[in-house]
Image (cartoon, rainbow, N blue to C red; front, side, top):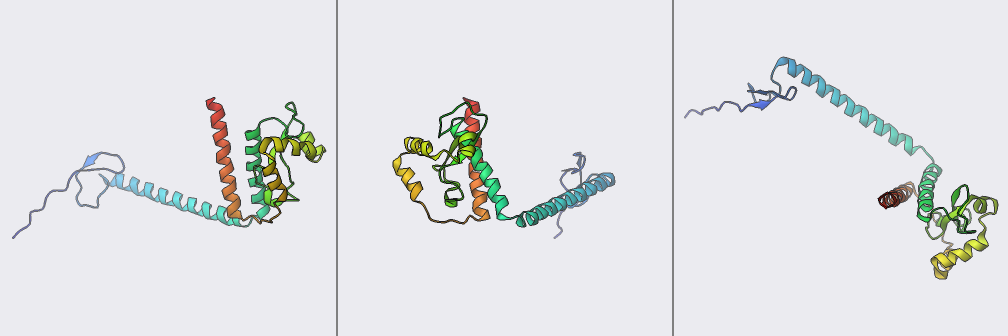
Amino acid sequence: MATILKPPKPKKCKCCSEKFTPRNTLQTACSPKCAIQLAKQLTQRKQQREEKEQRAAWNKRKAATKPLSHWMNMTQRAFNDYIRARDGEICISCGSTTAVSYHAGHYRTTAAASQLRFNEDNVHSQCSACNTHQSGNISPYRINLITKIGLQRVLALESNNEPHRYTREELDGIRARYRALLREILRQREAA
């Protein structure tokens, strides 16, 4: 019994998009000129993909050599940006709304309680004069903090003495979270 071969179905050339009838199932270009051009494109794409993978590997190796303090500083910057956006331009200590610049002032300093470095209850918008020149202006800070978050939460901050060492992965997660929260705040302000 003889099998009847069906003629191949027309295809679209991968290079010039013209319709053609292939001679075999593996043919993807309509002419030798298109086949050469397609081969060049595929080689170029492969080379670009390899270069991209090499750059990614290089960046990964480069990031692995950076000290933990680098990642801590980047995370602190993202967290502070969020706090300033959340609270606006008002000092928690003196109530000033006309200061030149505002910081993200810690109630308990990062030197005294590094475990509270990224605790939102511990950090609020503070004018540069109170934060820098008056060492945080802690007495009015505490009074206004009790008004803002309640005595229970302030006492919880003051009694939290459990040390914590951050890992790079944990810092990456914290940084991503606060960048997303900052974007959300900015998006809401634009919509309003």
